Length: 132
View (cartoon, rainbow, N blue to C red):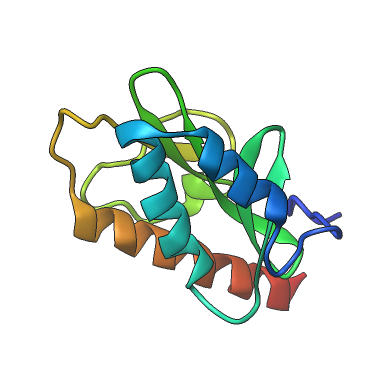
């Protein structure tokens, strides 16, 4: 049985996500938009949807990452984050599969490290799909 989180309804570009982004203004909205755009540009096979109120990206229909904005921070989350190499120690969480990076506007964070995690999550999901 596959352990991938699949969304057959994922779209190349989901208008609901653009609406979500317009509703999240200010520095947190900007952070969420910036990092979701990084996720969107990983490859031609990236699809997206709003899942449980979170902008989510998939490789095809298999979810690999999401963003969400809270009162004081933005989460960049990874559906299979527990299996990602994280040399910078950015990932938080202790669930079986998922991990996230918490971005606070007033704190510096490792931009290159987060970009590398997003790329790793994308590549990892492509590999998992080939093996599924």
